[in-house]
Image 1 (cartoon, rainbow, N blue to C red):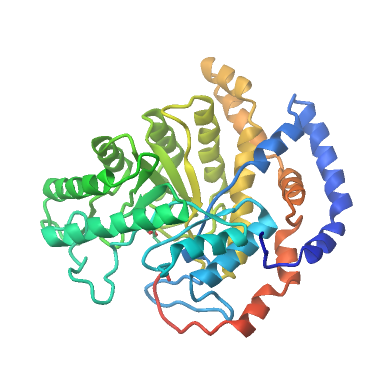
Image 2: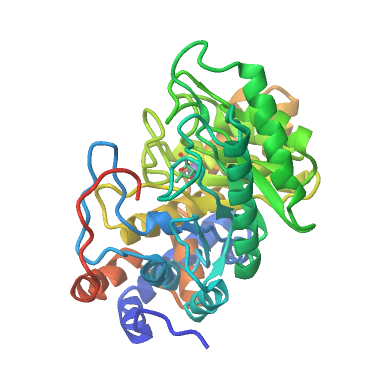
Length: 430
Ligand code: LRH
Ligand code: MN
């Protein structure tokens, strides 16, 4: 039996004010799409089965090394984070899973946590290990790396932590382990590139050996930060080679913010898929570095082009097309719930636009080197306002037509500010 945080009546009342306009817009869009042979209800069906996971660590305010500015009523533990994630899913109806991070989300009873989430209508996506911070009382520091550390005892500690995350994930019902290591160097000569990679591969293979049959290990590459000269798994090339070396359960995870500015990420997606190694995504946006800004807020066209490749990939499956979609953002200046509502809309919107691409026209233009018509096949789909389809899908599932309006009408954050203890000042991502 689920008990959702917001009153269904409030959502219904808010929707009632928009229902006629939505019907009008949906019908008009349906007529427009029908003229090009697209059945809007078929697209609605695809959108209705689309979902993206939210990061537990995104439910609280994020920060930079300089500062973090908490807001009253922000969550202070996994239980409050789950409640906030349930608000996002209750309004958007596209975020039914949470991706947890350990030890940040550690509790004593994971079976109880699983039930608690289920009662909020939530399940679990990939679990994230953390060997980029030292924990109080930790035997070996990660200051000089973790899975690739020169010190064997440190590597073993990192292996055991990842295996512990798998054990936790099994209790939560997860089947993916995301492994991002910040391992790298700040000075030329600090470490040998080949030997540090070999140490990483040896340690990662011990984590791989602990994976249950139906699990995957998602390797997350990142160009820089916290290391600023070299990073052990710095790009998709290092990631795919490591995943091929580890085995079929090892896949590559693409965090959109982990590339140099202007890198063609959609081509990386196509390459990883071509070789059956596309495991998942951390959606966000960025202008400079790993800014972890809201998905689609800076470069929505890139997000559309990524989904265009994903729709193509689904039509040409390699080794089972099942990428895990997750948001990974740092909400430094907005209400995290509002940012994830807005991001879920942007992500689902780009998926819907990618479904509207006339693939026959695109392929025909590509085959005949008709460059302009090939580009126009994408541009025509990108320019369509799919908001009525997204809203229809939400309403049909019990969500809100205008998610931000309904959220603000609920006064949820103000209520939580009364209930929850204040979060202290600090810095850093969580
Ligand atoms: C690294 C990263 C990784 C998470 C962390 C919170 O930049 O993207 O996915 O573990 O952010
Ligand atoms: Mn990430």
